[in-house]
Image 1 (cartoon, rainbow, N blue to C red):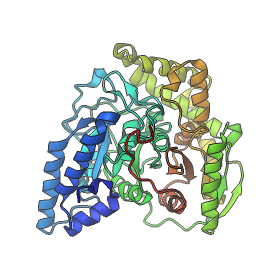
Image 2 (tube, rainbow, N blue to C red):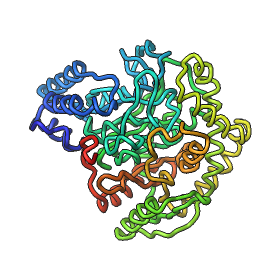
Image 3 (cartoon, rainbow, N blue to C red):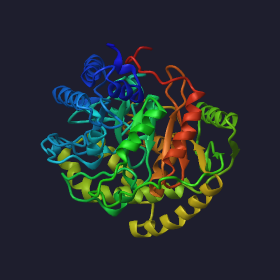
Length: 464
């Protein structure tokens, strides 16, 4: 059983609960995989072998006593370094925060622990979690296991690289402008951005965030199987009163018609042929399963992106800008200036909050008629690594391609990246649904997953 690290979270949890294998065996296998591939990737920047083995032993002891250990019993996971984990620094990729050690777990980390997950390491993020690429002056660069010349995505680039390479069955990520969905896309795995308030989270190492970030930033899972996303989402979304935005999903959502809208190029988004092909294959998979799929245009992503940029950069002005020069990260300086210039073209945050209500009403009405939207994650295949800091034209190219990622968080509704690439070429499609419809997204995602090449752990740079 030396290759337990290859198995899904669902399989591992079942094996551990039945005591066919021990949590310690599973954890040792995951740690061996981490030691074998992480030096090439730098996906995990805080390795936790002793703590992980101790937690696994605790789970085995609890099972031996006949106690309940949770739905993720013994499943190796990673968490991102921008979330509080007691005893570890919440660096967010910053040298300034290398000693910002959390005393208390964030609710999302606490929920993973309560579910029986074994945290084997903490994953990399760009400075300030600000980019769709992952490099910073504290932890260095993370590479994409498919191809060292492609971005692993960001800001949850370490999370996606790790789970793609078999370091853990599930990875925790965060998303304020695509930071779960794009790394999943770039590394060829699945990633769920839950809706507003569905997964409780808060960092006690800092003050409460501005209203814009409270409305747009979420935590969620990345995994190689849609079933593992479902398992992890249910664990992550357990109640925690420390997050005032947390809300329970209804015990059962009313049924909806199996109808999906396909939009290949929202508002003229420059969608490349390879991306369009993946979208059509996803739509065909749903149609073959009995879904009614038609091409149509959803409400505006561009307005949503404008709103989100205004709210996101107001958060950065308050919490990030005072640290920008003292931190001195060259990538962060370039990207922050470019993003703030984009945000300056919008309205002030108060006006954008009013516009948000109008736009969200339009989206809710659209999703009543079309419960699932199929659209690009990005207009282009995964970018060459660090393209965003190559020049003004290159940054503009990157930003335009990320329209749907930037827009969705302003709406507070869930989005799902479903891997849809071919061997050696990571790719994906994005599904969007209404409030509290994460399970609907996962149902549709499972249909598409079944018609795509299976997502298996990647040996780093195996294709050269």
